[in-house]
Each structure stands twice: as C-alpha cells, then as structure tokens.
Image (tube, rainbow, N blue to C red; front, top):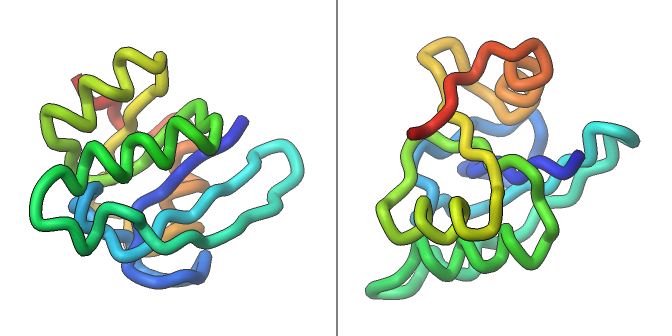
Length: 112
C-alpha cells in the first residue's frame, strides 16, 4: 500500500507537519517494499487552494492512505471521492517514521 505523509522535511526521521495543505513536503512510502521518496508539496506556496492541490498530488500518486494532523474540507472531500483513507497523527507521533510505525500498528485514528 502507498502512504503519503505530510512532513516538515524530506527525511523519514524528519518531523511531521500537522497542516496537510501547507506541509512543505509529502513523503510517499510503500508499505510492501519500504521504499520511499520525498516530494515538495505542490500546494504549499499557493495563496488559495493549497489543500486541493496537495490532495490532487496524493491522488495522482495512487495513495491508499494519507497521514496528517488535519485536513481541510476541500482536501477531505477530494480524498473521500477518490476513496483514499485519511488517518490523523496522535500526540505520540513526532517523526515520519514514527507515524508510519503507528499506522502499521493500527494506532492512528481515522479522520471523519
């Protein structure tokens, strides 16, 4: 499965970013191979529509799940339409790797 995670840096050990649309980076992680790649968020510098632009990027990456701290209504609607699961960071999540581990352990709550 492909995960997309909002982050402040382009490293697995880097800190998560709780704002999905304004996250500087998005990390694509393949749970089957553990291969990953960091991408600059295409929506981060937009004056409006950042969440939608970032959501479209996630959809284009064929992600099954996106991990973040919060999702705006437009991004959430885009993910629902594309059947992409949204999971929320908890207070225990500090790094991208940490949040991936928590997701795989079933510890991240679903965004409703």
